[in-house]
Length: 205
Image (cartoon, rainbow, N blue to C red; front, side, top):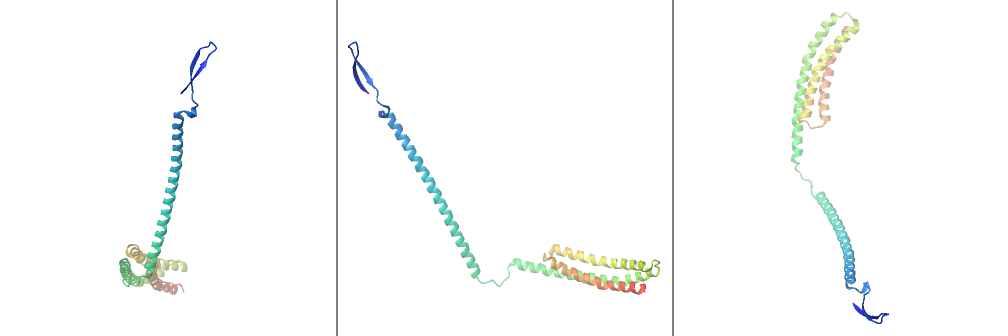
């Protein structure tokens, strides 16, 4: 710090210390260096973050592109491979289950076809016996006939119910298969029921 001599009004000489401007002081320049360094580091850090982000995005895009290319190559290879002659194990299992289901459907159809045919003669006889006692004219005959046909329908419905069990337990899973077999049994019922209808028509004349 500089010293300055000053002569007062009394004629005496005084020594005065002269203060330096703040920008000439050491602490000012140290602070300035710290601030500049901090700003530079902040800017540099931001650049590093942006660079890292750009690198990450570039890497992600590259991986995505390589993945797509790899997928396309795999699909192309798969398409170019000849089809295997042997069926997959799951397909063979499904075919075996379908075969077993068809055998059960057929067994039910055969069993209930025979039950329906066996029941028809007795139902016709019952109709004729009740028709002789009928006192309600044609309407009474029609009611008797419908009752006998309903008994025949119950036999058919029992068979169709068993077919439904096969469909849900070990069938192919296709409703069309169950419906096809159920229709076959229904056709048998409709055909055999004609015998009761014929008896009704004969008695109603």
